[in-house]
Length: 263
Ligand SMILES: [Zn+2]
Image (cartoon, helix red, strand yellow):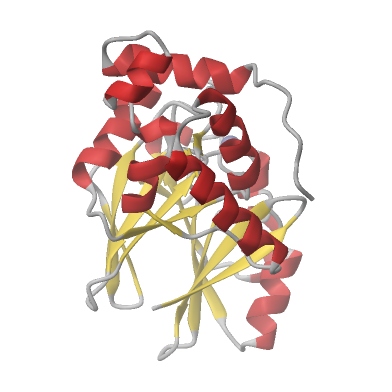
C-alpha cells in the first residue's frame, strides 16, 4: 500500500492510499473532490473507499462529488457521526477493522475535537505503522475542543500514547506544526528539545516540504501535549497531576501569547 498526500486549501492534507496491483485507491478525509479526481485520473486509479475521521466540512467536503463519480464507493465513518457524514455507508465502532489493499487498520474512538471522532491505525505487513488521526493530534498540538470535554481529549491522547508503537507515523489533517511549536516555546522557554524541533520545522518548511507525517516517538519526547507527566512541565505549569497539566497546556494554546513567524 502506497500513501500520497495532497495539500489543499490553506493548510489541509488529503491522503490517498493506493493498491498498485488492483489500481484502486482509498481516500482519507477528502476536504474537496477536484484534487482527488485529477490525481486518480492521472494515475489511472478507481476510488473504492473513503475513510472519514469526523464530520467537519474540511474532511468530508469531497464525499458528494466523489460518490457521484464513483457510485460504488464505500464511505466509512463513526457510528456516532450517522447523519453528519454525507453519503456514509459504513458505521464504525471502537476496535472495528477496515480493509484496503490486502492490509487492515484498527479503528479507535478518539473523542474530544468532536464527539464522533475516530482514527485509522494501519499495521502493514512490512512492519510499518500509519495512524490517520484527523484533527486529534497535530505536530506540537491537539485538536480544539469543539464538542468534547477536556477529559475526553485527555483520555484519547492517553490511549494513543499508551497503546501505539513508537515507530507509528502520524498523518495529521493540517499543517499547524510551526505555529504550535512557536507557542510551546513560549510555554517552555528553557526546553532545548522544543528549540531544536523548531529549527528542524523551519528548515523543512523553508525547503518546500511538509512536517507531516511525523513519528509518535518524537512527539512523545517533545510536544507539551503528550508530556503531561514530565515534572519540568508540571513545575512550569504549577500542576501536580497529568490531567491538570494537560488542561493547563490546552488552555494556554487556546489563549496563546503573541508569536512572530520567522517567514
Ligand atoms: Zn475538525
